[in-house]
Image (cartoon, rainbow, N blue to C red; front, side, top):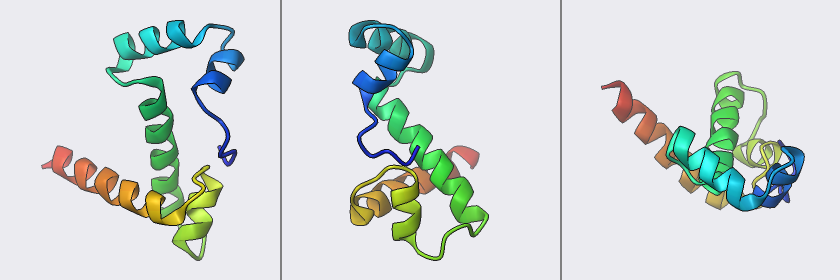
Length: 89
């Protein structure tokens, strides 16, 4: 999770399939591209860590879930939380 170099190619390799097969299967099952799927998993894990008060700073959480830039993580996380709240309404 904390490996910021983990990407679609790496996931495809671990699942013993080609990138295109992985993209196609994920799109059919989730409606998300593989890159967006990986980002969503990272944001969901970050949400858990933040709720449990695991880290002292947002930057620590960002690095723990594989984001290289805390400011980019913060922007995405705000959108993630907003979408999650909106879905619950």
